[in-house]
Length: 82
Image 1 (spheres, rainbow, N blue to C red):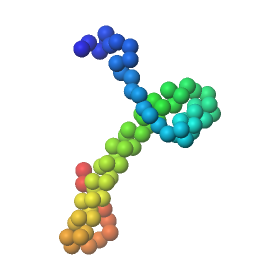
Image 2: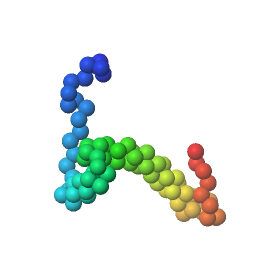
Image 3: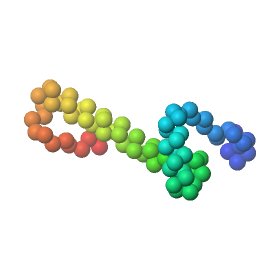
Image 4: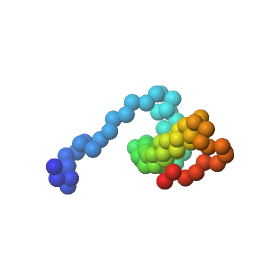
């Protein structure tokens, strides 16, 4: 499909959140004087790299702990696995 000829709504994402989360997002959008949609988009743009980094950190931590339990790692330093 040609991305230029995209129909309205094909790129939309519908999220269901708790009433508490919606209230927090609404308060944040009011304090920033921005539309709620802009606040949600910004939070996703900021949050995606954080979550991707978290996954990498968890994999490195798991690898380190497995080495510790196997008796290979005697020191408390975490070496870079990249």
